Length: 67
Image: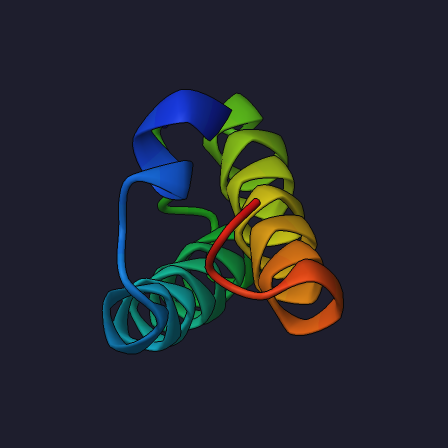
């Protein structure tokens, strides 16, 4: 997911997206632990998406919705 797509989301949608990504990361780590993970690079992609969402949330927190 691109940062420009994330910036278009509302605060509630960002919270929902963050929970969804954290759940996906948990499932991927579980699959990795039992050696059923097909694409190990997906873990890094999900971590980066979580960081992007948190960055946008922090930007909204500091500058408000007018940024």
